[in-house]
Image (cartoon, one colour):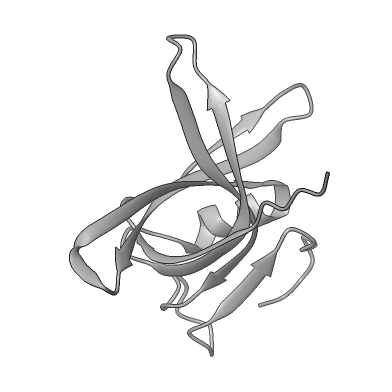
Length: 123
């Protein structure tokens, strides 16, 4: 049976992203929450948790802040918690920055970042 799990959201960060190193290798995870407006109903807002890993997490934690507008592309993952409730998040493959970033030396308002990013890529 074929399976397909891909989602694309455009929204604004609800708060500054948080980062932490996980596991024995110290893999970096950056998490943030975005608010996605429904264009057909102004009162309806969807809040999505987003997780980025490794190089993508490094760039997101460096450049994103509360209010930043982003396009997130990835897959939805659901985890069962200890209290039998569920946690749903988007594991991002791509994060495209749609608003100005934290640094002032950037020429463009848009930066597209994918999971394949290398540490030596200059922006």
